[in-house]
Length: 271
Image (cartoon, helix red, strand yellow):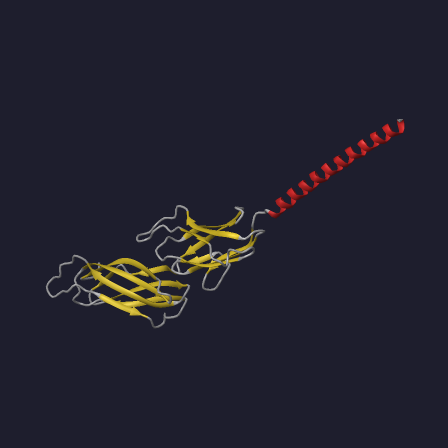
């Protein structure tokens, strides 16, 4: 009888041990499954983020008004990408006459990006009428699980044409000439330099006429990235005395135009 009771107790003990081991196994398997699931759901990773002038695919983080920006980044994701959001904006840049604030926002959902490990590569056009200065660029990648990653940087947007070292006469005598001189730097090459001179509100005297001058200069400048504009402009003997408005327009090989405006007084005799 005692032997039967002992065997029964032993069977109960073994049964409890089996239940414990089975339960422990289920718990461990559940934890392992949870760990595997957590490892499977990972945020995307953005690497090798580069941007710069679009025409030459530079990575120097500089671009020019009227041109485009080259952007590229490698994306690693454990799930397919849903969208790539790009944002470009400035902070408190001073606007000059005719300029407007520029802000670019776009979600890229192209089929080529809706895969697990795409390479982001885009060219974004830059308007010509925006202020030069520092712009903030940000890319956010979102995958189909809702996981996100963001990378950002700063881009200098510059004018493709710059002028300096001005030496332009402010007065000239009728029947003589005056000189205009300045340095031109054009990233995309100089196409032509035009000069426009005209008056406003001058009443011609006897034998006088309101003088207008328009001429385009190409020889010695066309195709150069750097040049010194140096010209002498004749003033007619019968030009009306008074203040004349002058505009110097520099056009580059991509059609960008930079204007510089000033005034000159035409006099009857030396002051």
